[in-house]
Length: 301
Image (tube, rainbow, N blue to C red; front, side):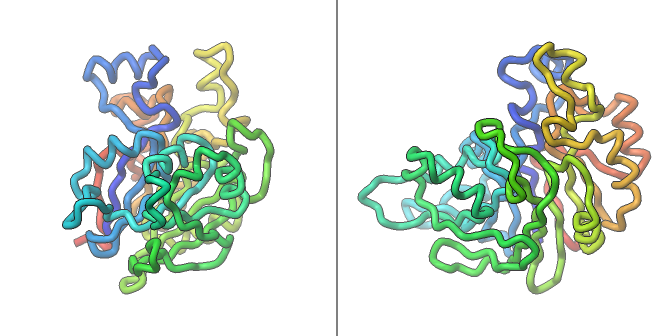
């Protein structure tokens, strides 16, 4: 299984458009790597790709990463499916890039989401322009990841509900609002767990983490008061659905996965600076902080 970190930032990326915090300032000056909003691309054969989340800047990712470019026909995409972990704008807003003319009856991509997240998105008439074949993520059940005309990607997916947060535009908690997703390659059994929004760990999450070769976890904030320390309108990390890294680090250290990674890193997070004390603590624990463009293969080789 081939995995590419298309983006590794929290909402707004790094630098964030309206922020001049220390790390945004350094990223603009070229002193720190920039981050697009978090998304993964996964493939079993380097031909058919599945996206885990589609932030609004997904078009820039299509340009940056040539393997996502159309091949052969005048129109087309190697992206067969999209899996949504959440209904917030920075997780699903990029679906609008899969829009097309009313005269074209085809679906361009399959979109996997919980029924609740799907209902939120499809209530907005703007998304009627998206050429999607919607498919349900059934919590706890492995389902094949198929393209819009049932193309076999060689991958399976299982949704794991986790405590997270409601979307910012519909602050209404629901058990299907936030999921982690396991993706498994059918032939090798290689398995990754992608959990970019987690307010607290649960026994179910711990079990699927122990079944995964690679664990990619919520690295949004280092501390609970990170936002409130710099922004008078900021809220605590827990209140907006994210367990701080300084709390989750011990849990991550105990996991058996051969590769453990933090992603969805907010622009205010000191993990943006590899020389910071928090970054050194994470590295000393044997855990990586993802960067945009990083590619891995499971199993290695």
